[in-house]
Length: 168
Image (cartoon, rainbow, N blue to C red; front, side):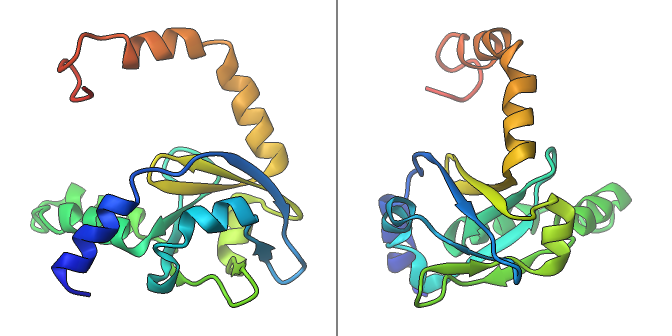
């Protein structure tokens, strides 16, 4: 992919919107909802990277362009520092390149199904420039658990003056 095309895709894809429910079949395939598939249309042909989330028991689906931007940052880490190597190893554990097939389905590999606890009910949740893939029960619990302190979190993260945290 040339740099102009990558830059064009980055301009097209700023963020995803929405939370969608679907079902996984016995083979780990899930049908991408039409509304989300439309949002992904600009990046479908380049494929995706699917990985374990760092902080939650879910999966993260990165469009290839977003993954490449992230890997450029990771590649700048000094590999002669043990903690950097440990981070890279853990961050990339279980990473898989995946594609949405012609029928609009995404196949989740068995090891990632096991990590996330996905059985049948699935939630695809937008997380700015990536999609989180959750077991429905775990997603609902995570949302419920976070609800009580969300006001404090929102104030701490978003309530600062412009420029204090890099968000403007």
